[in-house]
Image (cartoon, rainbow over all chains, first blue to last red; front, side, top):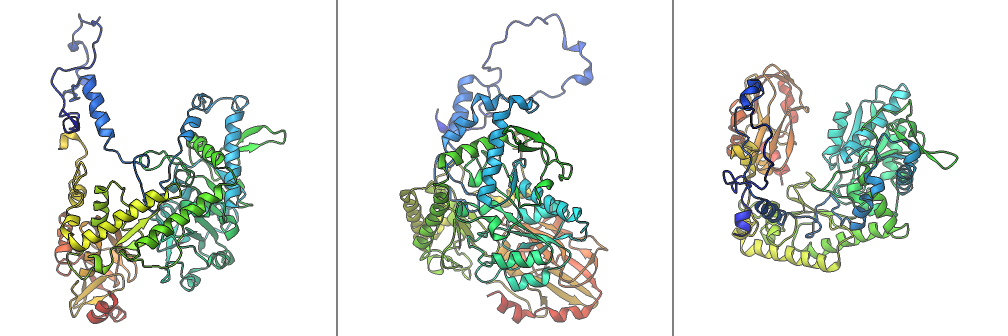
Length: 493
Length: 125
């Protein structure tokens, strides 16, 4: 009677006739099921598990102990910014004044909630160097779509309807081309140079009067700052396009530099990354969209505005692109982000960005003897290794070489979450590591030590890596079988 | 090391075309399948579809990534390799034997812009 027993499926713990409740005597005893129309009767039994309350409690408590989250361990998942979510954010979001709100309440009773919403819009505008924000989108990709809709609306309002193409770098997040396609735009890819940044010479011939804009992430998905951003923005603006900033990598820029100052016109922010709200199965997310001056009226409805008498109102704008969500997005997430911002304060926001850069560079420099670093030099908040170095079993000419997948699986044995692997696609054995600013030097040192140990194991005990993980509740999963023969229900097992 | 076959034509995006008379058999190279890892799905065009050199004609999905397929030649699809519908892993077993589509070429001179085996092999290093 231990973890193994209670760790079985709840259906396997089922004993026929066992219950965790007692019902009062039925008052319908004199009626029979036959009185109901047969079409309404269930043909098969429900098949629910029959268990007592304590079994349910032990089963789910044991299951929850198998979870991995940023509260249980280091989570260096590149491009995801898995920073710690301070508990005070939860306390603030749980205040009754917020949880008991109804979206249809009279404005006269929701001034505080609207003020918070407006303050977050204003603060994000300041951090981004833009004119206005909407907090309505539900997630990062939803923000991308909303932002691209703003760009389309801008061209449409000018009668410039031939702009149907959007430029996306080959290192971009997959959501960029996906959001653009959903927005009805045709994707044009621009290549990267050897240092992983946008190839300006490759960009020039792509520009023309059919270009709606360009989507960029800065620093890019390799953690490299795009130094030519002023020139790129100038070129895109000269051809009549707008610049879109994917805020996935905003973290290292916090309080240091601003997308608006770099020449971006529209952007989204992931509150669940940069502003420490829950993320990774713990969401929901929030993807506010900001715009420069002149584009404010196209933001989605409804919008929150501050009146000249200091009160706050909800308004709809007729030039708006429309609605992207019912009402105000994930309001409780916005409360958490506000709590985070106020806890840090203006003086500490830049420290978050700078420390995230310091932590990433520290890991990179400590491990580059063991793992291939395709782009040397200073990175921002994250960096990419291209697998193990040749002398540590990473030689891809060798048929049985140790892959990034093997390293990622072995990390689980040591109690760390794996980094993002096989992204970006520019490298074949990509391993994308983002420690965030919230980790102490001790945690970073422990991670570095484990990554070194794994490199030595890869050199000396290759089989141990090939068969990892060894200590997790489930061993290496058969990805191919999972895709080709998916089983989603207990009945299918 | 990934193998290459003499006599085929290769593209930068790792597709090959094998010319037989006025037809071309198009697939992905051994290097491409090796880099992709276990292939779990091949999104193929339909017979009678028009394909254009340099443009997408389908996609191949592995446990690692999904990659667009870029046609090395232009023409009309006359046949697809239906065996890949149920057994996409055949691409991993032998990428050159398991072509993806057979195209009636509209401009056979397009292959001149592609690489031969030696040039392709050199480009993969």
